[in-house]
Image (cartoon, rainbow, N blue to C red; front, side, top):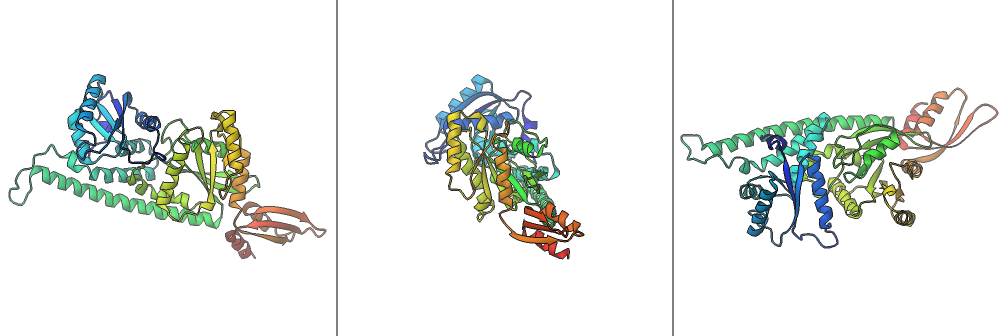
Length: 434
């Protein structure tokens, strides 16, 4: 397999970011040119590239050979020469042939949106699982690019039983990548089995699971830190968080929950990454409550919200929407009129669970969010009346740990009368205690 893109770059990495607008989306769904370009620049900066120029290129009919027409290719070549750029970022997915031809025509390194995101993930992954997932995605991507990687080798007529050097090298490389992919899939299957064991262990406790999802840079990690007093990396940067982090969250009723911070989503997320991160994203699917964190200060908030939902639907088409709570974050960054509008929209929302406007920075709305989480994880299960004798302290401790205590009083004999809401799993454990 070839070296990482960042290892192959010259020391001074001067990049031009090009956003092709093919007009393939309807006007209602198409992102504003400026927003698309800003996001592409953010991705490039996350790879520590120096952005020396940006360009939005209209593409009426995509050229199978170079994506752009000949005139636009010449214009980009002149731009690279003027700005002394040695890298061009194309904010879409290129075919291997298009990437090869553009590199030849522009005489610079060309990387598409998929390759760029893969490189960012490769740099940011910290856990062994995250590294496995990124490496698998990279290999799947590289496998389709072998024709581009080995075009410099001359195809000669085979002598004896051996093919020409180019053909032989491609076959060897394909076999090597296929073997690595098979091994990595086996390793990730072991990760999936381990996760299932952990889930089963948590079900026996059983603490409710709350998962944070959202577009990259929506403020999930900042909210996670505010709720749990953790110190997960939270930066104004695309894909600051890649590896899932679990912490205990103490709810207002005293009941603990487990909350997970997950990788951020993005529009046109490479399918290689969706497949590779399926084991991680299954944590979201299994959660009792899913908090969809949205950056309401971003003019593309609605489009970003749809992008997140599309990825989740791709993973699990029958995902139960009643488990979702939208968290409208960053209200500290909007003006007073916009904030009032958000609160009015939240109150009149027809969603299964009312959206909660918050600021993970100032703490505004956090108490309302915690109350919504408590209500959300307690929505399942039955309300029952329990009477405990004075010597049944173990059961009493179990109920305070696992149930929502709705009322309590003690009679003259010292017996404790409780009305509690208890999940089916916790009720089963209580009954087994005798």
